[in-house]
Image 1 (cartoon, rainbow, N blue to C red):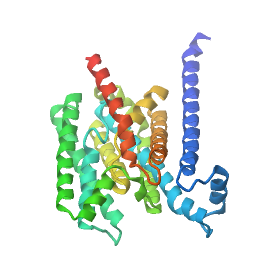
Image 2 (tube, rainbow, N blue to C red; image 1 turned 30 degrees about the vertical axis):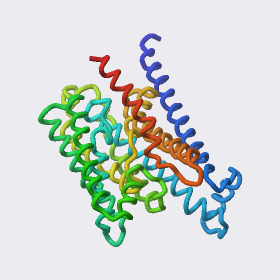
Image 3 (cartoon, rainbow, N blue to C red; image 1 turned 180 degrees about the horizontal axis):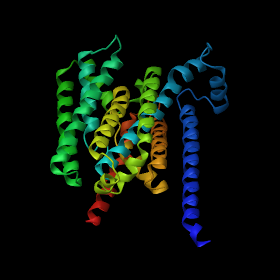
Amino acid sequence: MHDNLPASIYKHINRRRVLVLAVSLGAAAIACLIDLCVGSSGMDLPTIVATLAAGPGGDTVNTLIIWSIRLPMTLTCVFVGASLALAGLQVQTITNNPLASPYTLGISAGASFGAAISITLGFTIAGFQWVGTASLAFLFALGVSAAIFFLGKAKGLNTNTLILTGIIMNFFFTALQQYLQYSASAEIAQIISNWSFGNLSRSSWASVWVSAAILAGAFFLIFRLSWKLTALTAGEERAKSLGIHVEGLRITVFLLCALLIAGAVGFIGTVAFVGLVAPHCARLLVGEDQRFLTPVTTILGSLIMLVASTAAKLLSQGSMLPVGIITSIVGVPFLFILLMREGKGR
């Protein structure tokens, strides 16, 4: 009987993790419906459900509002939040740093500057501006990720090095973006300004499909690496002793994170702290096992973005407050608490 005790405890823990996953998924689904219900047109839930069931082929005003405006915005919210959360989790995992995230390391700032260049120049690929914007965002996100990787390799991936690197990257690319706004025409400067706060009003079906495809591909590849990433959390030397090529794993994950960030930033702009808050909340719920931590973090990222989107609509009548402002209001005190805990840990 005692021999089966560890196995029974493990099964109990996994059942609890599955329950957390199911509850998180249900909460995100409810948040989707709430986000669809909130808006200036004042449609109730039965009307929204009926409009969704009728499909996009209708010619009513409700069909236009739901299928052309609200639904793309809500689904973009889901996939962008999930992408940022997944990128944040994996950046924390491969750097072994709880304060790391795409925003705090300056990766989002680099992607934002790349996208701002695209907007300023009117850069397009195959006739689509969003392709040009996302491509430049990816290149700059990749460049910042490479700089962090090689600097970390040379100096050690410790907390001070990473956070100082992030501060430098944030200031540098923010200054460059401000210069672009200053030198651009008033119309372009306004577009960049609105976009830099994380504006969901730029959502479209293109942003839905592209961000969903990037998320699905990256999630599949990362989930296949779950065992290796879980082993890496136990320490680099332990991972190497298990035959894991740690450097190759880090390069692969950095590439995927850069792609996820570009897919998010390239459409709606910079959204802060989702990639920091969601992974920590998920760890508190399911622990470090990446088989459960990865999907729960991804779902919580969507949930945080949906709640922020709903709050942004409720706080501004007749228009939508940039969602990045809401996530920053929540994320700044969260980062401060983490910094205080890190300080006590020393």
